[in-house]
Image (cartoon, rainbow, N blue to C red; front, side):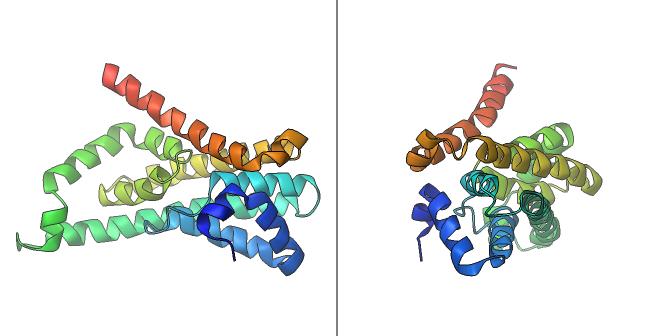
Length: 213
């Protein structure tokens, strides 16, 4: 069984092996990985962008159904973020309701910080939710923080849907159109690293713009 780093760098080969071994059960595996990567703050190490890219490349060969894969992946991305947000929304108020100042939640979390976070999501929440989709690790933690900050559920749901469709569509589409180009297939690990670097750029640009303002 491949470790996380090996699966990340060579997800195209491992995914094809899983298709040959498990057949249609691979759809469930893809759903579970994307759901967990976006739904639980303890699993940010799971592959996201590279897995979508590899799945798109595999669908282009006919090994998997393109419509089924897209719908399942988008649903996994949306529900994963929704669960993560819900957990944060439930845990946040309980953590801050404790009256004992020596309580662990008071030492790890700060009421003033959570109020600032709430103000941030009220002003930039939608943009942050969408952009975070394209940034590894950040997309795992931001829905939880949005929940803790009590971002409006309807607002989060809308931008969560936009982000899920945009993220899956872009990464999957890139894999479908370019994943089987010989130079890409031969250097997939380098392409994977490049995907991670490119995915960080939108947040860096937004941070620089915010600092300038």
